[in-house]
Amino acid sequence: MKILLIDNTENQLLELKQDLTKSRAKFAHVNGLNAAISALSKHKFTVVISAAIVDKKDGNTIFAMIAKKFPAIVRILISNNEQQTQNNAHYSFAQPIECKTIISTIANLANHNKAITKDIIVKTVANIKTLPSPPKVYMQLNATLKESNTDSQKIAQIIQQDPALTAKVLQFSNHTFATGSKPMMNISDAITKMGIDTLCCIVMTAELFSYAPKIKGFSIQDEQLHCLATAKLAASMVKPELKQDTMIAGLLHDIGKVVLFEMNEKTTELFFLHRVSDDNNIDLENKMFASDHCHVGGYLLHMWGFSYHIIEAIILHHRPEKLLQKSFGTAQAVYLANVLVHQQTPNAEFISHYKLNDVIDILTQRANKLI
Image (tube, rainbow, N blue to C red; front, side, top):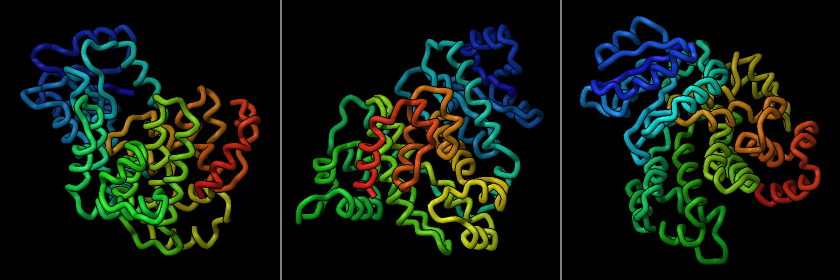
């Protein structure tokens, strides 16, 4: 793994440079954008770490340029404050930085980054004419919710900027969550009745699945309902501080399918012909597409700038044996929720390892109510 530090005239990253030297990491340290562009053109870097401002451009602007030309690179921003937006960064660390945390973060994401940036995935995704768009309204909404003076009026105004999205949110809200005979007629009603977390989920779901490829044998609506059920169930299993990320991971866990099935029409037809009902068909996906929806979805989220702990949940939601090394969290909850919503039997070792025998029946009943 090779790291590029893009520093400014104040040498904001000097301390990190010194710590990377001590850790014997492979890295290059440059000052200014011209030197950075030159380095990126000549060498293959895995990670780019940028100061908040370089040559009067902010880190997000720099990362937007890097993401377009070098999409496989992991982007880390050293911001000047915790409120600085990070739409194009996978991680953002506010000053004063803890170098050990940054180095540890880079080490932990190495294997996942290598798995989702294989040449066959990068090249295939690049050749697809139309890809799902990142959930921009959701991201704007999420940033607003972090402000101390946020109210329901601000939230409603953000959603109502997109009339088509507003209509879809209300339609989906009434179909899934409304109670009684009176339907929800505006976003304010939705906020009052459902709460912010659920509303955010519906906004993201509506945005993601507004992209509707015509894939024979594949229902976007069914996939949408499955992802929302998985997200709600998974979020109910984790600690409060993990709920938001778990909801996001649950909503996004199968996003790779809409890309995988667009790769080659004939291959997709053969896949649907040979797939086994009530099975995850991951091995068949790898055999026919040379990849699977987990890794393709992980790469898509990488391109959009999602953090790697969410990407990890996407990559591993069909690999319970690889989840046993960590404590129960977002990735583990998404795996279990996906299995239960699909009405499949969870991996026995997984259930035993996390001591879930006493609660699995309750979780199964909860999943059945969401289906």
